[in-house]
Image (cartoon, rainbow, N blue to C red):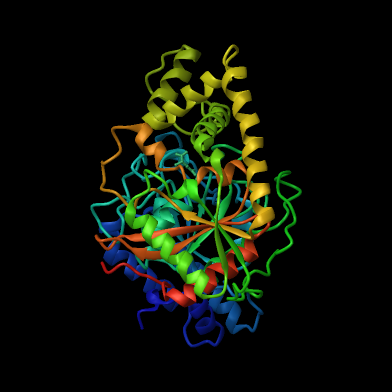
Length: 489
Ligand code: GLN
């Protein structure tokens, strides 16, 4: 029945009505994975047997008449920086090549309680640092829509397996765009929730004040289903998590109505550096919104100019501190070449265990935090962060949501930017300010370029504006028909 082509919402109905079994579904998506994964390479670990076992257990529960979550039996891939008890969680790093967490991330506890079927761990840039998935120590992932192109990053694997039809849903994490940019490059839906909406407990930290876990799917409804399952206050484990007003009810309250919705188009996001095709497709989406009755007008967010330096200073500073725990002693990789010198053990384990990009961030972060430079860089970046937050707050007095491109270009060829870290960083210009301001943002497909590569658009909302974003996303999805796009492989 080619179940892999269906959305999670459709599959949920089929399972609920007992028209298909969870085992049948798991077998179908695993068969799809077998046939395309050689080309896509979206997974680091495929959990075939445990997926089939979980599916059988879900079927047994359903047969026994238990009332189950709409996600029960739905296959999901998990980014490899989210701790899954007893299953390898490597962060795509040699440093954690053998790490099997003794505990589950909070999101995994929640998903397990929903009886989802975990299909495996998705590839990523090492420690979530990167924009192309080429920084993975395991292997690169390839864009299902053009196998010579990158899937985006850092959650490239999570986006690619959904786009390839290997699984209907996945989880990623977003510190500066890592859910949104791969969603855009792969033609799927991705949501970066408001900071604090989803517990970060068990997400291996990159930059704790910016990191947020979020859903990927091939439709707005599917992303809403997964968002509903993972949000929530986690007082025991994450003191930055909060109770949200939309908790668990986004899917139920979806409404494709944008009449009177005030949509701001910040002119700075459409300027030089953004490719014509990206600009045209996002502007066409704005036109669609106008035709649907929204009020669309230009706004200005001039501080976006400072977003990249602010982001790379703050995120690297936090990374240098968060990654200090990987010392070759407590867990993970330990050099075999250290002799009996402790410092030598630290230096060699870290030099051999971390890849080049991770080492670059640790050096940058240590530099901006060191005495003499702290005031000049770190403190300034924190002050500038406040300005960016204020700028968004002011913008949201005039508009309900903000529409922008996701990245200056569509997916580029493998290797095109690996030689120049700065060029790679520049691709994050449209996404990082959302994390700096702690806001939610939704990405969904809005067209294709001349090479048939997907173009995405980004809707940014005020804090806790998730319902608004998803409703606006649904209105566009219905008007454009750009839904459930699976790459022909
Ligand atoms: N590309 C950005 C970086 O390399 C964002 C990464 C992320 O969101 N995890 O830092």
